[in-house]
Amino acid sequence: AENLFQELQEHFQALTATLNIRMEEMGHRIEDLQKNVNDLMVQAGIENSVKEQMLKA
Image (cartoon, rainbow, N blue to C red; front, side):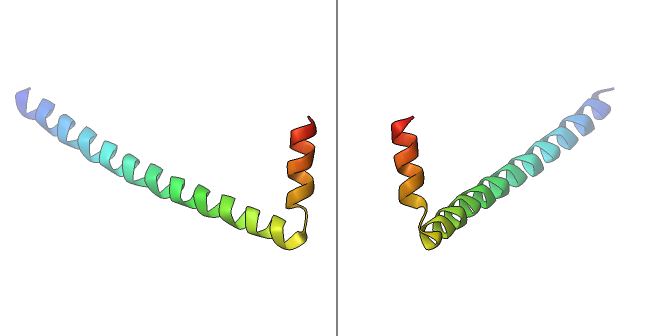
């Protein structure tokens, strides 16, 4: 029973580490996406109008 518990604990730790890595990667992807959307808005010339609408709301 002790060996089984140890194996389960190690498996859980490995899954937790993998999940943390994937969440960090997803965070970087979201930041990149936000930057790309902001860049596209600037290129399209709509950044200022969106900010103005947000201030009026």
